[in-house]
Image (cartoon, rainbow, N blue to C red; front, side, top):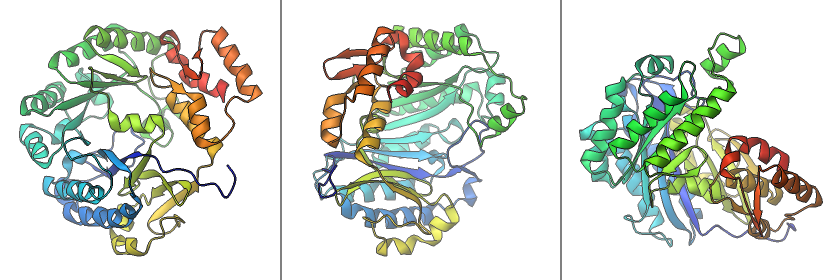
Length: 408
């Protein structure tokens, strides 16, 4: 894009609020989290700091429409409802001056772990206006839950989902992890079916991924972690898909399934390339301001984030200066944004209108190299193309990451 041409602000956006504390760090988790007992967490002080950050960043809302708010972590269900509710109200009030949807139309999600979620917590979140919860069930077999470092047992995971549904939470999602050593495809499918029978509106089913910097990553590097073979993981993927589709769920994204009308709107914004504001310790955000698309990450230190709360008032949003409050920042150019749209859009069942994305970002789309790569992938059955739209056919979804690499 020419230097003097500004990027348009996206018409809708999401807000992500990171709560960094957990009761325990799981060995597979590479998200920012700090182990702490509930009484040791600075509940109200952290809410104060997030509201201070919001007050500054909200100046960039303009006429954009707030579509979703997502409290992630860590374990946001550990956060005192009075503190979480104060942050939620502040976000809704800050957006009310823009072209925001009404509070009833905004998707408001809180991630919950069974160890800090029950009927009482469900009702408290409902009273705050939360209309969606995502519960980390992860497994329905005792030995595997212990292997994954989970603090809850099988009954605890099931009871948490039941509590959310019984309390009347409009949209309930359950997370499952499959592809763990010792688990058969039949067992993985059985767990998915058992969760579906409880009545959630959404299920996220992830193959266990070994990430560097985690306890599992260190063990795998030393050859001391039992792992399931790729073929068995693929078989489990297919079996879980069959079980959930048979229960009435649409497989709308590689790892996500929803009943009609219940896709995760916040995550859909990520996959479609919408702006999102990140608030809190270690939160990432991608925000168009001053004609530039900026990606930033707040400091990953809770202590530094809390100590610097009064500095937000003088923070330069357009420069995204790196310092005590923000640890990383970069300008996302059009070509990078297009590559990311392609990478994330191909995860969706609907795929991506590649030509529309390129036109919106004002960068070349179908270069000769991409045309050749796309033709090879279509011939190999790993990519489908109809006019400007690209998508990965169902039979090739397991190879999506490789398809994206080839296309890029």
